[in-house]
Image 1 (cartoon, rainbow, N blue to C red):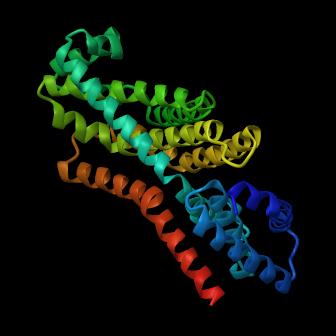
Image 2 (image 1 turned 180 degrees about the horizontal axis):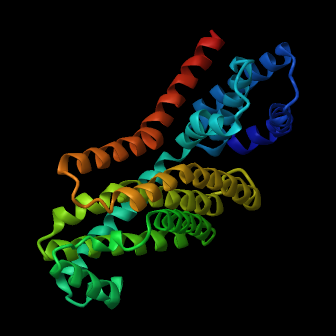
Length: 326
C-alpha cells in the first residue's frame, strides 16, 4: 500500500486518538490500552514500509503519548515546567537531531570562514566588529587588561541585559526560519563569522588563550544555544519545504510549534550564560584550572541535554513499547 493511501485510510482514526490523548480527562485503562496497541501496530507497519517518513514520526509521537499516559505516576508532581524540561522536550527533540547537526555544521563552517577572512584581509575585523570595539580592545591590551570590557557594567545590569539580548537573538534566529530556513542560516552565518574574526583578532595579538579562557566561560553555553535556536529555524524551514503527506499549511503550523518548543528549552541555558557573563567572566584573574572546569562542565551539560539524553529517552521508550507489546 502506498503511504498516501495508508494515511487516508487511517487519518480519521489517528485524529480521534490524538484528540483523546490530548484531553486532560481520565481515560479508561482498557480504552487506553486498545489505543496504544492499535497505534503500535500502525507504527510497526509504517516503520516497515515507510521508514524515515513523517508518518513514522507522527505515529511514534502518538504511541509515545499513549505510553506515557499508561505508565505515568499518579502521584506525579503538578509542576508542568519540570515535566516539560526533564522528559517531554528531550524525547520530542530526538526527532530533530539531524537539524541540530546541520545547524552546528553551518556555524562551524562560517566560523572558519570568519577566521580565514580576518587572517587574509586586515580590514575585515573592523568591518565586522566595528572601529569603536576594536579601538577600545586595543586600548585595553595596551593597558595590560585585554578583557576589561567584561568589567565595565554593573554585575546585575550586565546579567539582565545580556540574558534579554540573548533570548532576543534566539527568538529572531528561530523566527527567520519562516524564510524557508534561509533566514536562520543567514543569522547563524552572521554570528559565526563574527566569532571567527573575533577569535582571530586575539590570536593575531598573541592573546588567543587569554581570550578563550575568558570568553568561553559564558560563550560555551551562549554559542551552543544560538546553534540550537538555528536548529529551531531549520525545523520551520523543513516544515515549509517538505510537508510530506500533510498540507503545506498544516506542516508549517506543526513546525512552528516544534520550533517554539526548542526555543523555550533554551531559556534556562541563556539565563545561566547571562549569569556567567555578568558575574563570573569578569573574574579574569581566576586560575586556568577553574576556567577550564567551568567551560568543560558547560559543554558537557549542553551535550548531555541536547545530544545524549534525547537518544537515551528514545531508546528507553522503544524498549518499553516492545516490552508492553510482548
